[in-house]
Image 1: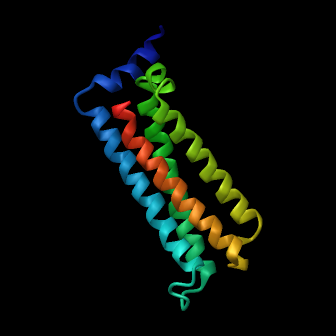
Image 2 (image 1 turned 135 degrees about the vertical axis):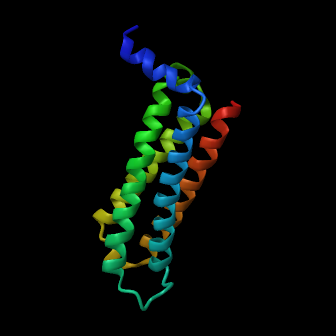
Image 3 (image 1 turned 60 degrees about the vertical axis):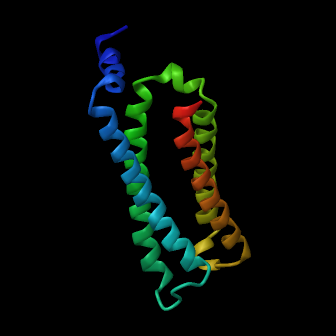
Length: 145
């Protein structure tokens, strides 16, 4: 094993690095999900006095920033114990849910969900929140399976 990989595996046993990464990961989730909830409530008609375009630009930007934080911290945590995580059912399901959430978001924006605000757009927001909440639940179960 190379020295670099040994350093990454040491993240998992360090007394404060791994817990700090978990805090960063949770902060990224809050940024991601909080802004998605705001935008998706607007798609459902809440706060109709707020123009969807400017709200969406900020919410999507901050959600993407949150996702970037989640991805980076998640990759570092994964690197500390890849073999163990790849055999963990909760982790594998979580990764599938994250992929599904990304595909749903891409489909939502590709079909112009923010301009249509129709039943399909609302259904996609329900799928989005459900998928992200399920991913969070799976993330918590990783430690127990």
